[in-house]
Image (cartoon, rainbow, N blue to C red):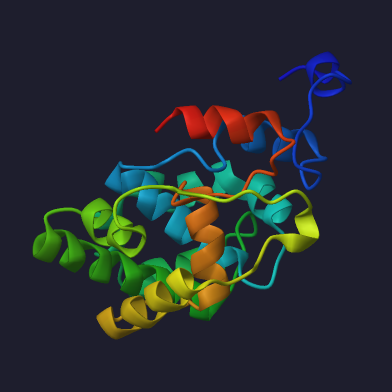
Length: 198
């Protein structure tokens, strides 16, 4: 996206999208319904590392994460041993958090278990919204919740399954990113576009 397009006055978008990386992510990815298991795992991994940090920090490091974590492939990540974990802790390009690295390897293993049990992670995760995007109609960012009954239920079940770093706030951020909910503001051009994807 070029700067001219980003600055067009006739384009109304959610106010949180300010940095060029945020704008691109907002305009092309955020809220688009995800049904690909590998994409689900990418968002799950990135949300794990985002906990306690800004999303912009993650976006800036996204490509480095992709390289460090073998293209976000859960089958490869599930096989990481202690030596690999130590190597990741030495990688200055990612967020060097021992607990989050360990959780990511654990989550990859649980993710594969879910696929075996449900046929796909997609089928499992979309069950929390009855298989369709929940269309919200927020007019102001301050009205957008950080948790909902659905994210509470998702968090509780994912923890029961064995996932780590899946609190309700993290789950709701994931729901927003993966399009389980449409939380673009009603005045944002993407709200209408996401709605039309139904």
